[in-house]
Length: 304
Ligand SMILES: C[S@@+](CC[C@H](N)C(=O)[O-])C[C@H]1O[C@@H](n2cnc3c(N)ncnc32)[C@H](O)[C@@H]1O
Image (tube, rainbow, N blue to C red; front, side):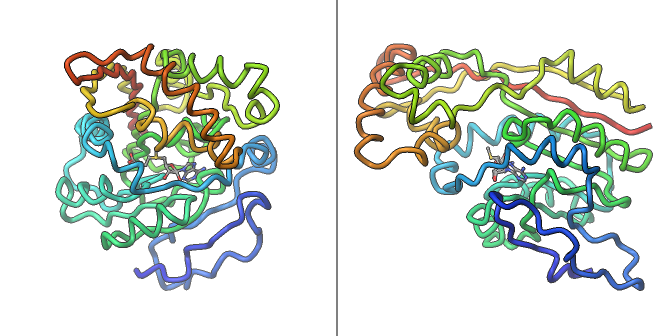
């Protein structure tokens, strides 16, 4: 079913405009991929954390190969042969969503993302992608697989969402997600120190994120409580990077975005003049190579 009109732009600062969701004709048996109301309590818990900072698909894709590996490792553990409908939650630029069609050629593959630049980039690949916020969404009853790669770390309170999604899913459906487990890594410690320093505290501390990611055992307990069979693990990848300030470049595509948006060009130049040497010290380059260890957490749940 074409889901024309299901995409809704929303102003993250104002939250979802409720009550104006497009109607889905009764004859269309498939449930549309659109936000359904979450409980008011959960909604208000999540509302404060809406982040309006735009993504840059080109910058994000600079390390496409390194960022693809955990997605592939995650999808490899979803043990279903012929799902009807697969949804990539927080699909970003869609390069990884596109690979799902090769794994499940008969499935309807869809993605959604809250960021308009990412949605536009994914649509350019010919993928059916919608724009809305995961916090306003409930899985359609006919979805067989939900994948969320490197998204939930941007959503404080996602543990409650995971439970509500699994509760809404049908028996036999799969939910698989991956989040970075690197909030204790040297890169984050360097940033944490800078953001808390006297020079940058006032400007940057309000934009600095606390770690919303749980430990693997906590995700395991959470998912076991949803009447699901689970598979939870962690992997530390050792990325081999080259070029000048590669860790800074890596972070520019993700963790640095909210800080960049908070500073003007001059202040940003001053900030990065402190940040780059500190990162280079934490991740020394030898023979032109910088090694970036990157811990990631994985969870796959199959609803019983
Ligand atoms: C690090 S990128 C990952 C993109 C893609 N899944 C991948 O693995 O390449 C994070 C993506 O999550 C999206 N995102 C963050 N918070 C979101 C939310 N609340 N609802 C939907 N998408 C969200 C961002 O817009 C961004 O495209």
